[in-house]
Amino acid sequence: MATWTERLGELGIALPGVVAPVASYVPAVRTGNLVYTAGQVPVIDGRLDVRGKVSEGAEGVVTPEAATAAARQCALNALAAVDALVGLDSIVRIVKVVGFVASAPGFTGQPQVINGASDLLGEIFGEAGAHARSAVGVSELPLGAPVEVELIVEVSTTEAGAAEVS
Image (cartoon, rainbow, N blue to C red; front, side, top):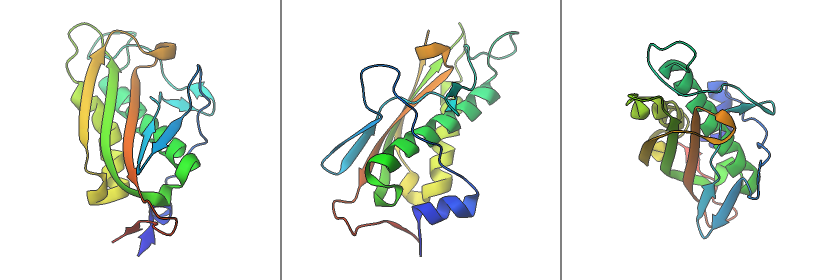
């Protein structure tokens, strides 16, 4: 049996550092056995990795494929916030993912874009990564980000309750 941290190692995934808040909020908050993350944008090494609205086939916009990769990064940033607050190995299951996609007019592929986050969580957590989800198209996101993702995560209520991969 492996822990979630060991599972990340098996997958060759390293969690990034926690993204510093850009306004008046904290990256994650725990209440009871739930952790809520703030919305995370695709920041890598302190910089927004990609900017713009998502569209298919238009010049000067973010492609759905690039946005899907950005959603994956958003999920990694959210997991880093959970890890910093309570430790990754205290995760029991992913409860919900909320994803926002800055969409150009006519773009309706929000669910496929947010699959970048959902697929990553399934890859890491297996059945414990199966979650409810919303994928919403919006006109603008903070800092010009194409994608923003937040998580609701159930965590163990005991200190020794680290989850194990089966």
